[in-house]
Length: 103
Image 1 (tube, rainbow, N blue to C red):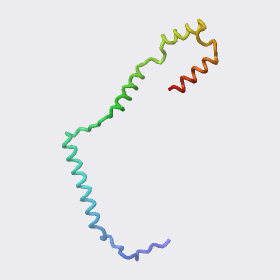
Image 2: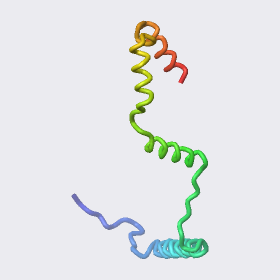
Image 3: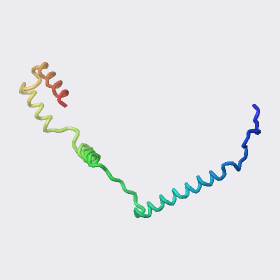
Image 4: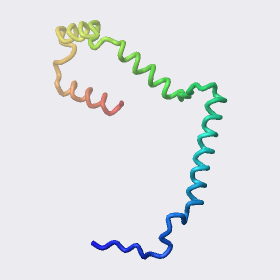
């Protein structure tokens, strides 16, 4: 491999004025950011949408709910023992599919 440094405008000082402008712009950005932080009292602020608040409440409520509801289990056992459910598998399948399609 051969490196050829005979390119025109191969001068490290070319574009130095542009680099100074970039540095000045970066410094100005930092100054603006510092002014915004000072104006806000230095504290971060987050605005949460009402939908996100509702979702957060729903998640918290679901975490607090028990995994098994003993009253529902007892009721289901009683209905099964009395033959009110489970005696007709076609009807059960239809009800399950209807429940899935309605939701």
